[in-house]
Image 1 (tube, each protein chain N blue to C red):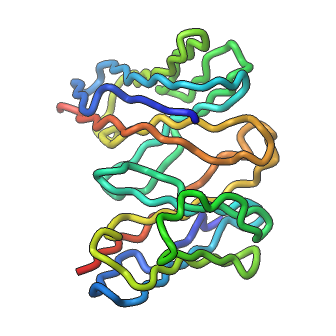
Image 2 (spheres, each protein chain N blue to C red):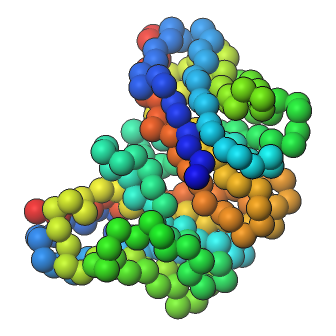
Length: 117
Length: 116
């Protein structure tokens, strides 16, 4: 398996622009997670989906952030409008959630480094 | 809410020596999972080792082992025979065992340097 795939790997944009980050989970995984990593706040969960349905979005910072999962193999995280404080590395992760030992581990993608000028 | 604390922002070890990274956590739950993830300069998050709280036996994965002390809420990672490729940020993480609660809570990380 190719693992979790994220695109783009790097994104540089100007304040006020819309940013869309993309994620393809590992095939067969029914949980998908979006995390953000910053120096100030560390790694924090933004939102996660189960079978394409958002389960917990309490970590989404504000209404400028939205996430969708239209099907089992694709998810997007959108920021509109973007601000400099959104600069961070955004990770997507997926897992099977079956609780069989080892199979519910979250596997991370390579991340997208977002810079908002 | 659960919290995870890594009190060592940075650690260093001589190549081939052994190093232990500390992690403590706070929870009111009796069943949960604990993880160590490694983040090398490539920034990819890589699972190192996993421990189920209901298991008394400490998990091991080749040169990596943990010392899980449930009563003390401590979960340290021991790396034996350190190699240059072990240089990375190491994150301790907690997850509830309640089905459907999949959130990972991370510590702030420990940066490990390997001295040749």
